[in-house]
Length: 289
Ligand code: ZN
Image (tube, rainbow, N blue to C red):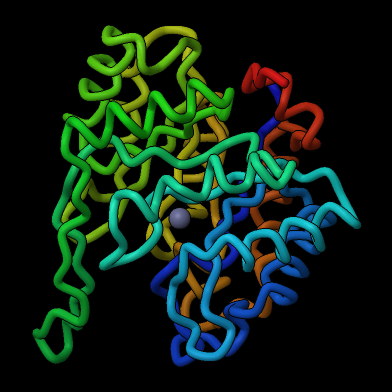
């Protein structure tokens, strides 16, 4: 079996320091988290940036430039930028980051491509109130435009699958020549509004993608360690980090992104799969220069 690609999602748009004081906000903290995670075994860094003062998600080119510059001083971890951004961002703002970074000579090798729309909520089960009541909007015209933009610039789309119908959306985009095989999928399980993290769902999704595709799983919450193990057993890859969960084990907050990566790496090694270096990941994902 191929080596396991571990992607670290260091900050995301929604997790806060109230949940875990170790969530990185500033460009320096985000870069440091990616660098430490690389040392711990991550091959890909999935990046969002935050307003350094408020911690609010910001699709800001200057902040991305700072983060990428700092990471590149230290290591060759693959850069995967979000085009999902965060709640309230416009379609233009979310995708503009790709041409803007290319103009600066900082092309992200991978970018996330949300493959459809979904209810995106965070629920306080205790208070029975929605802490976040959002719809992640990705209508057809925008899906096509985002995919085409990535294709034009040779940025590999990481196709984010929150629900099973989104796999067919990706197939449609491929038919329309906006996506090019081999496709790479990220199954995002456990979002309130999307598919939940069960082995049955994972097997179903894995069997639904076009042959020859690569895939990975991420989970909102601690089930990443069991679903990650299932993915490793099935030849897939894993994403984890403080974007998706702030705990290292039940009731215990993670000290860092690197600590989460190190735990997943141990699981992979114990299961007999080495973890990929960035160079391995470039080959496995068939990235073009
Ligand atoms: Zn993200």
